[in-house]
Amino acid sequence: MIFRLTQRLNAKIKAGPLVAAPLDHNVYADWSARLFAAGRAQYILLSHTSSLYSVVMYGCGITHDGLFIGRAADAIREFMDYDGLSLFYVNFIAPATAAVRFCKPLDRSVIGSMNELEAVAKLHLATGEISPFDVGFKLNKTLLSAIRSSATQGYSTPRDAFTRLGS
Image (cartoon, rainbow, N blue to C red; front, side, top):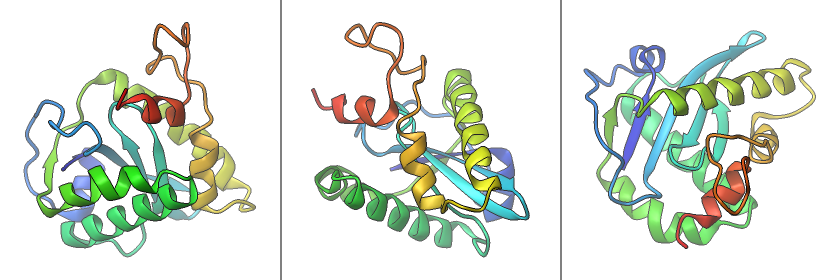
């Protein structure tokens, strides 16, 4: 499994030097992560690198790479359970967590799309009326051009893109 970290998140969890790497051979086991602040709290945005399917979790207290891996895997599992996608987690993601690598972000389109998702997340989190967990559902309904397909004619939602990966 690959977690692609921003420099800011890497500095927080002390994962060491990051190297560039192509997408993981298991298309479901490649996730990008970034640290951001909304209000006075830290959050981590976890986005599946290809589909931008996203989960938001609290960043407070995550001080090293082992803790990050455990909390990120738990956040992804819990979110996918509630989203009706637990079979994807059980069959493809959970087995990949046995060997985790930290890498540099894949490319600028992923970084740009995650910037957009972060802005949407900050907007929802700033009110304090919605939990980070629930923000993930809002993000996964956001139309993005970076994950378009010929079937969607220009835009797609991260959830739709994630569920289409296997087909």
